[in-house]
Image (cartoon, rainbow, N blue to C red; front, side):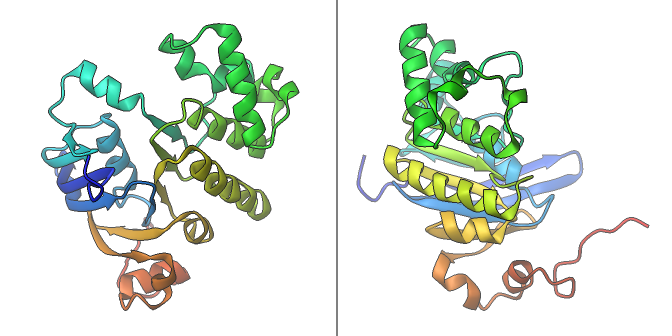
Length: 258
């Protein structure tokens, strides 16, 4: 792979649901070792974009490349191999209530039969340590954990296989500002430790500023601005300015039902 080949490359992505066009020609790159955060309001297509990259949805048009390889036309077994090198922190945690924490963390490793149960538990305990949780947490069940601890377990699961790419879906949703900041710090730390590229979606600007190298704004199915974090406060884009300052007045009109 050439040094200048993006880890993820999306070009001209289009995705519709019936008559509703969600993605309308989205272009975005994520460089090797880079953390890109996509911001935008609810319903702008952030989650649909992630699902297209992960192969959970198929766009009607466009290209998605991972390490220079087109993945939209791959055979199922090839795509599965690509996905093995990805980790995901889900918005709601998505932990399995019936499994102890360590099995949640090692779920992918066990499901793919990469390691036996004793080794899987060792890996899970080491990943829990990376996110600041002791080995005793591994034997608890998700219902016994606070929301912040559940996010940490979700992050431990995302890095369990030392992935090349980690996806973060609204990583601070449902957390108080202090715990959100703790999670943001852990995201930066763990992503760096595993050497992964990261693609995140959020509407939490405090989170975006902390975990991103570069921020891109998605509006009406297209990236309308992107640049380094330091540039966002003087982006010169009225849509970006309205969004990052949370102003009701501006070019972005929110749909409000009577």
